[in-house]
Length: 191
Image (tube, rainbow, N blue to C red; front, side, top):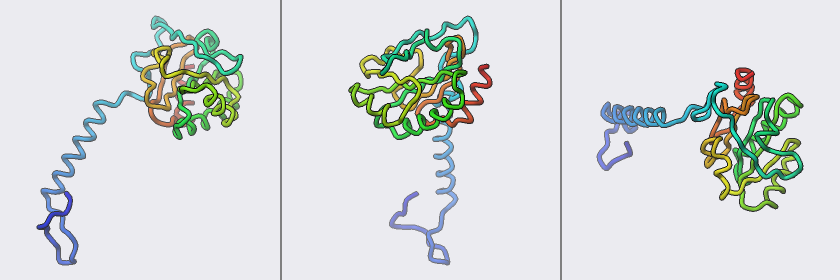
């Protein structure tokens, strides 16, 4: 694929690509695509989650930075978006930037919460203040990650999860910024 000491030069003085090189490129690309497709989790649902009433609802409670609780009990009865971020994640900040106008528009119909995974509470407080968040923000120490186990793998942020009115995870996006239109579509399906 890369140039070698002996390469074919066409009549215009450019390196020519042989059919063997093209075939090997296509084979490599196909193998990478197949591997990614086989290992990528679905982005439209949480692992093992469904909207069936028989599935257990998540039981969670995170350390809120103010008096507004971020817990299963506080969110039941409304659709809820919970977003896990870190203070050093640019995609996490972009995700939060999408959530701010959504929360403003949805007012009291949908719960929004951000859970910041970080080691220093003061840094998490500064992070929340700098983003001017109007919805609850919680702090989760990395050593307490088991408290978020029901939300799936949160090691690659941002992780955005939609809970139905009963607290069941019905949609998630992990390691990427979820666009408002796709979150709205998931909310419409969960209503």
